[in-house]
Each structure stands twice: as structure tokens, then as C-alpha cells.
Image (cartoon, rainbow over all chains, first blue to last red; front, side):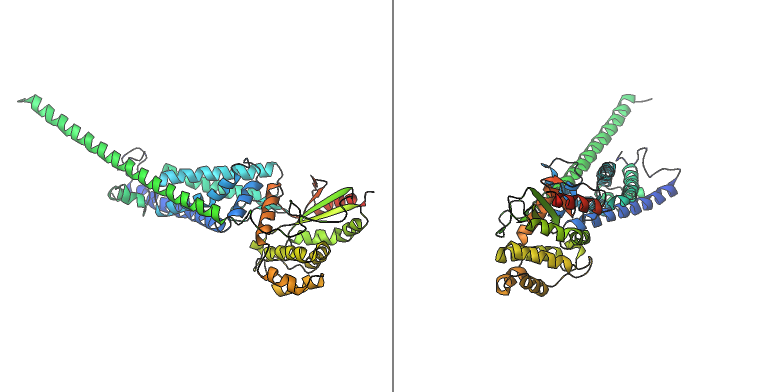
Length: 176
Length: 248
């Protein structure tokens, strides 16, 4: 599927204009999702202990892996975000992004179903808050939307101004 | 018509060359992807090691005299039949409301020997403060405990809730904390350095971590004889807590 002349290529003889538009749409999608990841990760990096507590509050993972996940999550978020923004390994990072959003949707939905009142900790913070469950529908809708944008990038990873174009030499083709 | 075999072999040669080129291209692509993935893995690994180091919990932190293993401060006779343990953050507004509702009666129950009241003060609301009041206040309480004992701690605890700052703004200053510590019965010379230098900040961090490990995700959370008090509303929790304190 990485083959630029394959069935999912932007380079279709019949629709060069569509290809050009998709190149820009892909860029916008990358900047949107990547930007959200970077903000989410950077806000959590300053306090690793808090990040661990936020993961623990979901009561989903065994204690043995909670600290590791708590430390790793903000880092992985920043790395995925940075890769998307600069357009590095877009298909792979978009797939990881979609998987993470799916995991968060499951986490929030599980908290909701079990009646936990916790802040999602999506952008730092986390833990119990009175009335936190009122935010769950919005949080889930937001994550599903970002999951769909990520999925689009898995489907059509090629876009304008991506490092992939330089590394994998597809620039000239995307310009056709 | 002439020399068809030669033409065929030329075509085959061209095809073979093309295939070899494509192979080389594919190999180059995968090497590139592998290299980038390896570089990203190194970045993640190094950052992970840094985060582990930066975790602010500290197993070697100084412990204030009079504190329990559960990072609590018990008030009252240990022979009392009921133990009421309360997780609180000095900046948590709901804790302020809770304290106003139960403080007097719980203290009376302590004085009558009906309960042991254990305050487990944590600090997880620095995010909602301009000057890390959550941590500074919890540290100050530990300093007062260490320097002047449980009674001064209890009085200091009540003073802080009576003068609780709103979330989102500045908290009480270190000077104000020292003044309240003196009002509560401590000597300024004994507490000022510890309050300003956050002598028990590490212990406060550990307390907050211990709360999380105990499955407590918010404050106020009350445990009666080790059982968490479940309540739909704060009033539920207040009622159950008061009922336990009034039992004979």
C-alpha cells in the first residue's frame, strides 16, 4: 500500500485535482491530530506521578503495569504528535494514534459504565471530580472524531509537506 | 523475425534489471523505515528513563513524628471503638464544606473517646493554585505536627480550612501559614524554616501516591474502620460519618 502507483494512490490519471485536494486535506488532518497529541502529552510531562495516578484512577490496568503506562503515555503522545505534524511514517503513526484513541474511548466508556466520577486526565489532571461524568459524552465524541481523522490518515497517508515525501522520494509523483 | 531469441533475452534482461532495481528500492525503503523506528524507540526509551527519575515520590523522604504508615495523623485514644479516616486536600473546596459540616462533632467524639479520627492530608490540587498551595499547606501541617504534636496539628488543620483560599488563585502565603502555626500552638522558630523550605514535601508526595494506591481518586473520602464510605452526595457521606461518630 506504500506503493504510490497502487490502488490507494493519490496519483490517479482521471482525478489529478482530487489528488491535489487530498494532499492538502491530509496535511490539515495531520496538523489537527498531531497538534492535539502534542498538547495532551506536553501538559502531562511535567508531573509523572500525577500521570501515573490518572491512569490508576481508571481502575482498568493491573497495578504492575500502571506506573509504566503512566510514564510512557505522555511520551508516546508527544512522539506520535510530532511524527504526524512533520509527516514522518504517517501511516504507522496514524494507526498508533487511532489505536490510542480507541483505547481512551474504551477507558472513558468503562469509567462511565461503572459510575466512576473521574476526570479523564486527557490534558493533565485526572482523578475524582464531583460531576465529572457529565463530561464523558463530550470526551467520547471528541476522541471518536479524532479516531476517524486518524483512520483517514491510515487510509490516505500521503499529504503535502510531509517528511515521508522526502525520505521515500514521492514528491515528484504527488505533484503530477 | 530475425534473431527472436536474442530479442527475448534482451527483454528478459531488462525485466531482471527492473526487478533488481525494485528490490533495491524496496530494501532501501525498509531500511529507512527501520532506522526511523529505531531512532524513535531510542527517544522514547531515554524520555521514559527521565520520567522515572522525575517522579516526585521519594522513598527516602523525611517522615514527621506522629504520622502513621498510612500517612495519617491519628487524634484520640487508640482504644476508641471506631476509626474515622479522612482523605483531604487543604485546597479542595468540597473538603472545606465537609469540614464545616462534621468537624465539631468529630472532635467531640474524639474527646469522648468514641472515635480515633485520622486525617490523611494529600496534595493533588497544585494545578488549581497559583502558588502550589496544596503542597505548601500539606507540608506546613506536617511541619506543625513534627514540631508541636497532634493537638497543634489539629488546630492548624481547622485554621486552614476556616481560612481556605478559593481554587484558581493564590493560596495563603508562607508567612500566613507560619502565623496560623503559631496560633495553633507551635513556636515560630520551630516551624518557619520547615514551612519555607518544604521540609516534608517528599512525604506529602508519597502520601498523595499512597492515596492513589489505596484506590482513592478524590477528596474528601472517608473510611470507617477501613471501609470506604460510599455516597451519592456529600450529604450522604456527612450523614454516615456523623452516624458512626455518634454510635455508642
